[in-house]
Amino acid sequence: MRDDIPQDEIWNDDAARRYDTPGTGMFAPEVLGPTVERLAALAEGGRALEFAVGTGRVAVPLAERGVPVTGIELSRPMVRRLREKVDEETVPVVVGDMATATAPGTFRLVYLVFNTISNLLEQSAQVECFRNAARHLAPGGRFVIELGVPDLRKLPPGQDGVVWSTRDDYLALDSYDVLRQRLVSHHVRVDDGGGARVFRSQHRYAWPAELDLMAQLAGFALESRHADWEGAEFTADSPSHVSVYRLPEAG
Ligand SMILES: C[S@@+](CC[C@H](N)C(=O)[O-])C[C@H]1O[C@@H](n2cnc3c(N)ncnc32)[C@H](O)[C@@H]1O
Image (cartoon, rainbow, N blue to C red; front, side):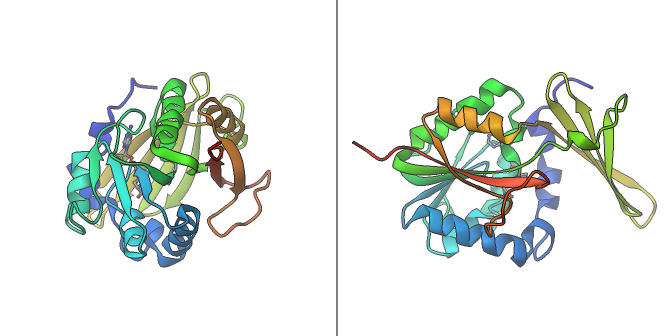
């Protein structure tokens, strides 16, 4: 596997321009609706902070739903896309690393969705991210993580990659470095003229139990874990999870 791909090489102008798919994929109402409703309920009328807010896929509808939302985001091109939708007053954003950057004020909810904790490539950075969430929260505040469950059961011995889309116009595969607990997702989109564009993202995968330990190191306890935003039961076959961590109440 090649050396780390810098995040700003991944989340550049081109990626930001192509990120939004209004009405479909991760922007489909059946995906976003339950996400926003659950986050609004977990915010309990307080302020929310999205780590890695991106182009505001979730933050914009959550703010429209009446929850005051702030973001932290590393990529200026992604923030520029967000600014085409809402101004700084509606969704303020601090440009910086979600493991270390500080947003002003105290929050009732911090959330980090769409597998994005895995963009932090070291275990220590993922632990720092939990600690940073805790620093932003009032007592009793919640940190919500949406993350895929590592798919290693699909990896046959002696093979280091799994193909997961073979559509004519979209090929996708994950290549694994199991020693370093890393994967690279390769997405190949074929256009009408037969040309192809490749997008790659790099991740450090983690099982739910490892996240629970990171949460514990940062002072959280697991409040709930479901397979999706609508509260489906999390089972041994669930491909991803929505986990809610909570700080103790004051006193
Ligand atoms: C898959 S997108 C998710 C964006 C948004 N949360 C959503 O659900 O659509 C991943 C985002 O994480 C951002 N990101 C990656 N590493 C980051 C870091 N260390 N700190 C802050 N943002 C980061 C990227 O720039 C990108 O905008």
